[in-house]
Image (cartoon, rainbow, N blue to C red):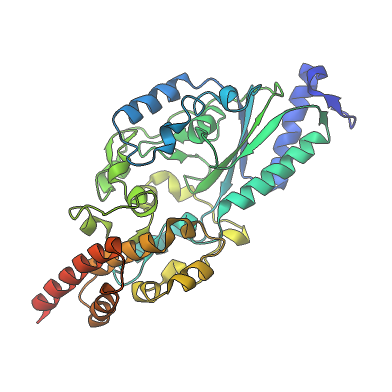
Length: 367
């Protein structure tokens, strides 16, 4: 393809092939580890989505049903869309082995690896916008929209069709080259680019993710009941967490990576080179007491630019209280819980009261 810009409607088949090659090159230069292109047909994924919603497996995530079929029909979300450019960016901040060990240290907080650094949304959106600018240097008069988990988009289904990876039994996307430790982003466009082959399924008979899930939220292969999922409970859900589920959360205060940590394909996980994804404020090895003692202003300041900030201070305190209740008896933990009980809001007080009860029971056992 020459250096002149062309209206997208005048591009020949050869021009489009060359443009797709350039898009891949630009994507790599911008820090995307993989890029694929697909069409908009998502009938199978739409059927799965509707079935999942009908079973109420989305819990209180009402936004999953709010936009009708726009989520599974890209052209209804962005009129004129005929192609989706799907990208993958790895985020693993350091070796996963440390994460496995951290889950055994019950006085320390476990935070999902994706949330240890800065919020990924701005970074991916900025890089995707730069990719669009490159395309604009070759093509005039095309329509597009950039998405990074920011609209009703079936990003995993689109990425699977674009050859980025396959949806595993835990419902996360898995890449043969990088496991599942990555973010996804999309560009919806009306440029008729050549499409890639869909990724093939490679889970085989393995069900390690099903077996390890602390709350058994993966109710069958490729079926997740979000209402049981620790990521949903600690991030999306704002209410009182069922007492039967609280002990199963362990020290997980924001998200859960168990189904990824046990996945054999994650032995190929790559350590991210992105500075924004590296841990901040010691969140990869922070003590529960330290985080629980943050005031609301400290929470807002220290987590500025972090995805964690979105859950709000009350959910943060709720999650920490549960983790402290699950920890082995520690007089400092008990003192911290009791000192916060009187001033806590009703939601947080419910979980602090439960945690105090757990700590006192363990104290009696120790004594």
